[in-house]
Structures are given as structure tokens and as C-alpha cells.
Length: 399
Image (cartoon, rainbow, N blue to C red; front, side, top):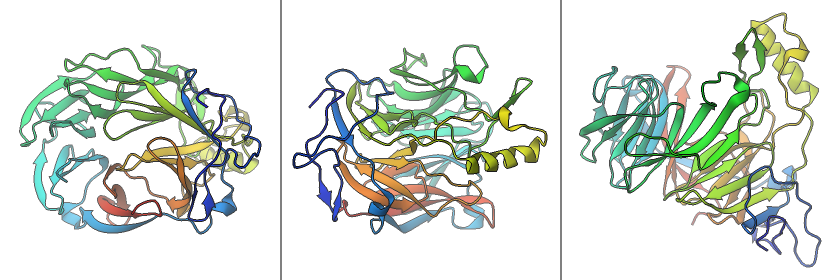
């Protein structure tokens, strides 16, 4: 049962819900769709059936907020770009809008503010990604200056390194001083969006970008293109690849158009894959009409034929990982970005790929996780300032 076409013989049953849904008791295996990911022959594969909406009712993940950073108006964040948490509980928040990184203790007490706006040593122009390395040092990806700034565990500035272009996120620091990074941009010098690529590669300690461990075609991500100018709308249902880091190294990857996820280890090699036999659904006219109305707010003469629409809805909306390495897979549901739903469907998998939960989860995306806690940036619409909430996750599989 280790070939890409294999199926698991039986599944788990937790909280009254059948979760492993391939085949049990002699039932026929669920027919699966062809892989859109590069799954090596012989890799361990978990095949599942999709969970129906009615099966999710009564199964919900909830949160208990036990700490809020930036709760007072004078301490609010201008725009949270990234969060990471050190093993000692220190919390690092990249305030992209205010061009610095703020450091807090595990009790929320402010410890330090690193950097300021500028281009000099230890200064930032839109810090995008923060990452605590294996030795406790801090690495900050500066989105505008395009460099990686390193700070010691004692919060002293240790130097800046010019980063390769198109780095979107630092995924992991490695013992040899290199980083595993997610890059996101056009191929070579070609500005055409049809050449957009999503890659994961190693950035050396000297700042050199290695050959990609994976290289995914991004397809056309725009909604309307006129005279070389492109407009993007977040509610256009175009499947977009997603990459999320795994604790201790490695990452998960999906292309989103199919319910398929590939798990990579710290060495960049695939460890296992999973998929669910979700059949593609055509894009309904309600989505087309809503999107066309939004586009025409800015370009009144846009015709329907100018919209760059996929034929089918994506299978997946997003991925995330908690502090124990469990994978959270969000099946795609249509929603108006101006009136988002309070909850979303989610399937949770163990670090080795077994489905352990299927239900609903609050519609919030966390930026970091440590233990049973997740760290969620939230916007205060009254003050237009950002806060960071530490939430203890409450779920049947957490004891």
C-alpha cells in the first residue's frame, strides 16, 4: 500500500465521526483523481473520501484567548506581517507598517523593539517574515530592502545579508546557517503573470539561492488584464499553490485545484502524500456575477469575456499547521470577502497523514503556533490597528 494508486484499508473513528474514509470491512476503495502533484512511485499515500457537510455538524474547534498583544491603542500594531515564537516562549512580531520587530515575553510583557525605518544596518523597510533559528537567533526578511537581518538570542544586531529576489517567506533556519525559503514571483526577467512560479529552495549563509526543491507553475493569477496592466481580486476562485512549514523542518505543499497535499521532510524529500476524492465543481454564475460587479466598480466597461476565470472551483482554500505538527486542510467554500463566514470546514491530519478530525473551525488564520496555542493577528476596525491574540486551541484530539 505504498504506490500512488494505493488505498488505506480502514480508518479511524473519533468523536462519533468516521474519519478514515477509504474502505472498511470489504467495501470498495474510493475512486481517486489523478495526481496533479509530483508524487514519487512507492511513496506512502493516504486516500480519503471527502466529508459531507452534514457530517461536520456538531464537530467544532474553538479557542480560548489567554493573551492579547497591542490591546491598548498606544501599543497597537500598524500592520502585522509575521509572527514567530521561540522555544522559551518569547514572541516576535514583525510590524510591517511600522518598520520594526517587537519582542514580548511569554506573559506579554514588552522586552524590546528591534530596528527602525531606513536602509542602514539593522533598519527595515517593510519587514515581511520573522523566523527564530535553531540556536535562538532571529532572522528577519526585509521585503523592500531585500535582505535578511540577523539578531542574536540576546537581541543584538549581528548583520544584514542581501537576499535573492522574490523571497516571500523564510520557512526554517538550518544548523549550517542556511535557510529554507519560499519564493514567489515570475520566472527570470519575464513580467508576464503566466510565468509566475512558486518555489521552495535553500538560501545559503552567503545569500545564494540554490536549485529549487520544488517548482510549481502559478498559472495566471490575475482577474483582468488590459494594456499590460493587471487587476487582482481575492474572491476570484483561481487555485493558488500554498506552502506551510512543519515544526522541526520540512513543509507541506498543495496546488489547491485538487484535494491533494504532499509532505516534505527537512531534507526536502517527499515523505508521504494524501488526497480526497473530491469531484471538481464548475464555477457558478453567482460567483461570476459578484466578481463582475466588483470589477465594474473600477472598470465600468469590462465585459464578462475579459474575466480570467477558471472552469472549476478550487478544491482547497488553505493549509495550516499547529504546534504539534498537525496539518489543517481547508476545503474550498465560496464566500464574499466583504461578508466572510464565521466558520469554515476543516480536516485535520496527524503529522504522519492520518485524518483525526473533520468539522468546523473559526474563520481566523494563525501566523504562528507553539504547543496547544496559536497566534492570530486581528484588526480592530474601530481604531484600524492590529493586535495579536494568543489562543489556546480546544479540540477533541487535544488532551
